[in-house]
Length: 219
Ligand code: DAO
Ligand code: DAO
Image (cartoon, rainbow, N blue to C red; front, side, top):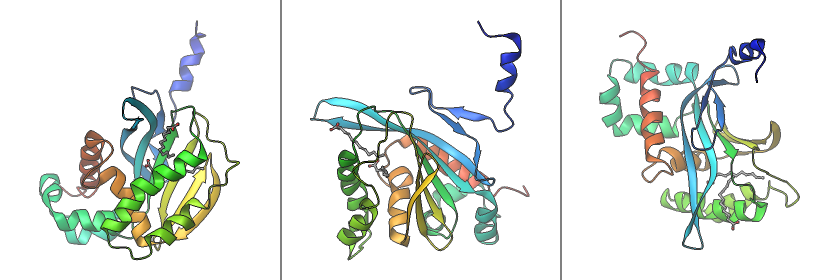
């Protein structure tokens, strides 16, 4: 039984959004100005038959930067016009706009080795599609940040943030593990969630709509 006052703790100043299948909660704002655009689930089929939930994710964008960078060009368009615009999509994915993908690990048996190989597969294929000539080297630089002794049990929080100047900064449970400056690497990571072939299609739709709605300030 909850004490009567316990419900007060639910009146959090920053409410969270909960991914229903996994129970993972995502704060609606992080780093003061990054706002949650949408949440989803990353699954993986192992050994060709078992489908596991690997992590829940939330995608965030810095509202002030979105408006600063994109308002002038797109501020007059409606959400549905924006969602049809390839150029808008390009500017959203590739622009110098602060964004964060927050991952909450669900699968309890995740090893650093399997993270590395999944990353090489998912992000590696994007880097190649985008024509990065040194994709092998870039992947290596990224994955070498993750030491074999790191542990990522269920409940761990990994944040992949695009900071000013296309710097990809990674943290695990709030601790910084490294930063790499690469526009294509940042874009490839976003592509996993909001690109042509995303992990979670519904999440992608939500994220795009919410992003477009951030520009609807005057009408
Ligand atoms: O134990 O062999 C196994 C299955 C592991 C699945 C790994 C999927 C990894 C996805 C990347 C996680 C990134 C945090
Ligand atoms: O889901 O395929 C995927 C890749 C997601 C990005 C994984 C980033 C991995 C950072 C993990 C650090 C673990 C120590």
